[in-house]
Amino acid sequence: GGRCRGHRIRRAEERAEELRNKIVDQCERLQFHSASIARYVAEVLPGKNQRAVSTASAARELVIQRLGVVRSLCESEEQRLLEQVHGEEERAHQSILTQRVHWTEALQKLDAIRTNLVGMLTHLDDLQLIQKEQEIFERTEEAEGILDPQESDKLNFNEKCIRSPLLTQLWVTAVLGSLSGTEDVRIDERTVSPFLQLSDDRRTLTFNAKKSKACADAPERFDHWPNALAATPFQAGLHTWMVNVQNSCAYKVGVALGQLPRKGSGSDSRLGHNTFSWVFSRYDQEFRFSHDGQHEPLGLLRCPTQLGVLLDLQAQELLFYEPASGTVLHAHHVPFSGPLFPVFAVADQTISIIR
Image 1 (spheres, helix red, strand yellow):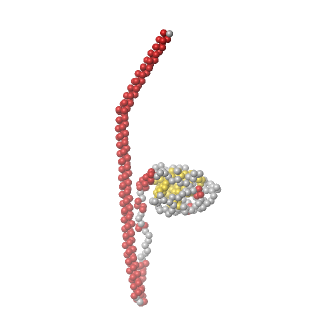
Image 2: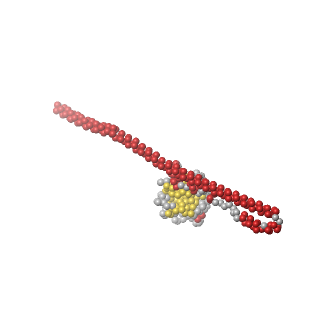
Image 3: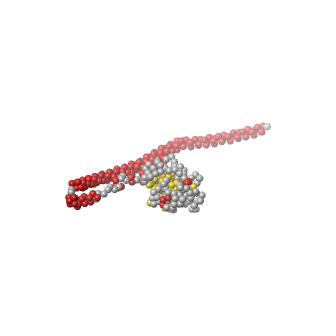
């Protein structure tokens, strides 16, 4: 019994010694850990704080400097454009004054000729009239030489004087940054060409070279060109929508008046070939803007995967842009004569309206 007790005591002493050693090791580790934390607090964090302050100051200065450059550029562009507006206003004003002087003199001359002729008619007898025949002829010829006023662009203010790629790009960037989202454009299934298939959500058009027999003919439907109109027109305000075009090498995207003809293979119903439609188009590697049979080539550096349309009906302006970068691809400014429908055409694969 004494040996067992002695064995238990030795085991207890050994266990206690192990625990003491572990505690000592743990205390040393804690000391090292505490020293490391103390160094971190005393040395690293102050350095981090200083670097954060320094980096924030540099970032602040960069923001101020870059916005200062943008502000300076905007102010310079504003001054340049306002000077052009003033110059164009003065030019139009001077042209109108010149015309006023010219036609006032013409009126006085015509009045003098008329008074002279009336005087001859009233006071001269037959013989005297015959003797004045040459003078009457000359007076008449002089009056006929004064032509009627003709409409001239020189008398109108030329709004092109405020066209500025810089202003357009800045404005588009600002507008896209402030809009809450794009329009919920849906395609009117009644207008869809029999060469196109419309998805159930009415946002995707797929080209089919074989004419579908399932499409019932209707007055609204395009029966030859692979076109489709949106269901709802825009009549006022600012509107933007986007189209996924990455899968197609032949498409058209733009706007059209509701009067756009739907039937036949002529130019009247072909997008961009009439007065009713304005479109951005791609055919293989060629891009262009088309309206009324006039085609303007667009030198794009790469094929856009998405195409944005921005319609400003107050300013009567239509813009096409690349959504990823906000880069304006083309801007068109012209008075529109009525509500405009988003319009689409595809002759290769698929295009989809992005919501």
